[in-house]
Length: 270
Image (cartoon, rainbow, N blue to C red; front, side, top):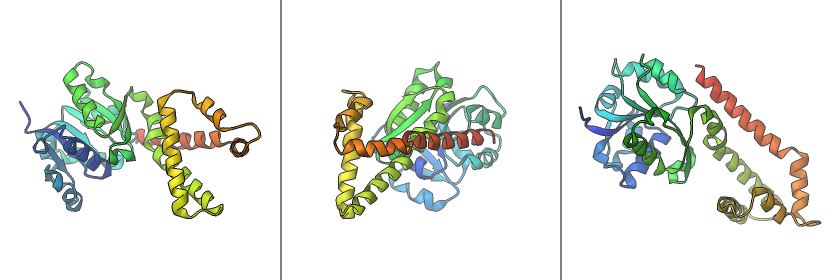
C-alpha cells in the first residue's frame, strides 16, 4: 500500500532540521511528501516555513511514511518506540549516534526490517557536511539505496561504508568539527597574542584552513609532501612543527578520537 508521505522524520532537532532543509531547498523532494513530528511545538514552528507537515503524533508519522528517519537522542529512542504503539516501520533511517542497527531492530521485535544508519556532522547545516552512511540492509533494492543516498547527498559528501566502521566515522567526522573549531580558535588567539586584531587573525586563519583543505582535496601531492613544502630548511615553519611534534600533536588528536569512539561504543551497549 502506497504511503501518504515519502519521508517521515521523528525528532526535529538540529540535524533533523538540516536534513529537512537539504531535501526541500534543493527541490529533491516536494515538501508535501514530508512530515515531521516532535513534542516541542517551538521546534516544529522553526521548520514550518519549509512547507512540510508537522505533528506531535509519532505513530501517525510512522504509519504514513515510506521511509522513517529517527533523529532523536539515543536515550530517547525507547520512548519513541513506545509512542508508536505497535507500529513497525518497514524502512528506517537512523541518525542516532552509537545506536546499532541490531538495537533498532530488536526494539521493534523484528529482525527483517531494513535499517540504514547515517552519521552526519554539523556542517551539514550549510550543505558542506561529511556523512558516513551504511545502507547494506537495502543493497537488494536500487531504488531504496538511491533515495537514501540522495537525501544525504543534499547535505554534503557521502561515504558509503559498513556499520562496523561507524564508530570511527563518529570519531573523525561526526565529532571532528569541534576539533577543527578548537584549532581555529587557538590559532586566532595565538595571532592576537602576536599583535594582530581578532578580526585580522580570524580572516587569515579561516582562509588558511580553507586553502589548506582544498590543497589536500586536490590530491596533487601527499599530505607529507605538502608539510615538507611549507617547512623550508632553517626557516620559520619548521620551528613550529618541531614544537608540535615534541608535544605529541598527532597523539593528542588520536587520543581525542579514541575517547570519542569509546563513548560511541558505550552508547551502543545501552
